[in-house]
Length: 466
Image (cartoon, rainbow, N blue to C red; front, side, top):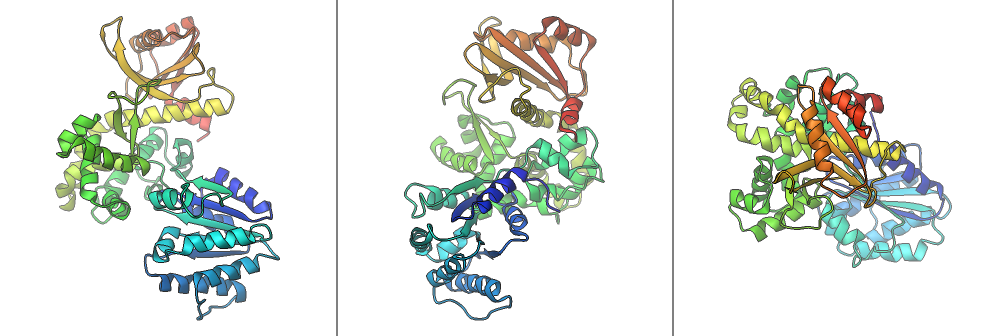
């Protein structure tokens, strides 16, 4: 069953409806649903679909030839074109009179096997773009290859594309559509342990409890997710062991480059190079205090929830899991889940604020949201703000997020209000988010202040209608 991606499908349909030559580049990390999206898009349309394989040029040319000739004749064909140029010229010829879609999936595999393929495509596009009705789609999972060899300025195909689409994991609202049978906080917990990657979402059974799902998907040696982070890194990078060590260090709490370097046992310059690659893969994120440029205050965290959960809880218990001690390992994990979910809830709250903005219901028209940390000159201590977003120098939004089983009290609100005054904004709006509601004193004070919005986790679910 295909779920989501309405915006991406709409964009592809608009390109298709133009009737003229279109060249779209679709890319994104493995498991994010690129092939599923394109398969859904070409249904009911005249389309040639070809997936490259990690083999030589001869094998890829034979496979492409079969796809083209089967489309042309409607029957399986055993012959092969003499070259990629001849095969692609045939497709361009077909598309002179009717709309045809050509999908080259896993394009990096094909292009690596045939070094001249990109130049051949460039030549044929330049020759036929004004008369062709072809919709060409190049799709790839190798992020570095697609960005450096297809989209980059020096790439042969630079300037030829008419659209590009980077597929990202689903946000919390979209992931909830996979979990119709989960209630309340289980939706957030599921998002917290597997994130928004479609292939990982499919591993979750929303008719079982979160405990059962964790045991089945992470604490079971034969499950898909048990070794997924290691397997994915092996496909994406060289020296996956060092990458795993870096991710594990960050997941365990090392957030500064010096701390990561010390835990991993590698020089900071070496770690910086690896972390840069992890950022490009969407696994790690770099944060600086909101409003400040990159500095020594920068912190690193795991952006991908599945990677964070796995490196936080699975890797260190690997030996026990291999021996079938899923119950024991879960007993170790369970007491830490609320603390683990704190960062996840912050992201859910940010997404909610973006939703309010896009719906025209936010009191602040911010351009970005981020965290802030730094010195509180009044209290003479270090302070943090979970969410901060500015409209301009006079107007800003401040947010605090609490994923606890206790109701948020007046003290938390007063702290948020105090910290909002550390900045020189004349118009301040505060959002206080809570998993479990608010005390009477907190609610009364929020009403008195007038610029405070109290949001329960249940309110977010209700707003999303999930």
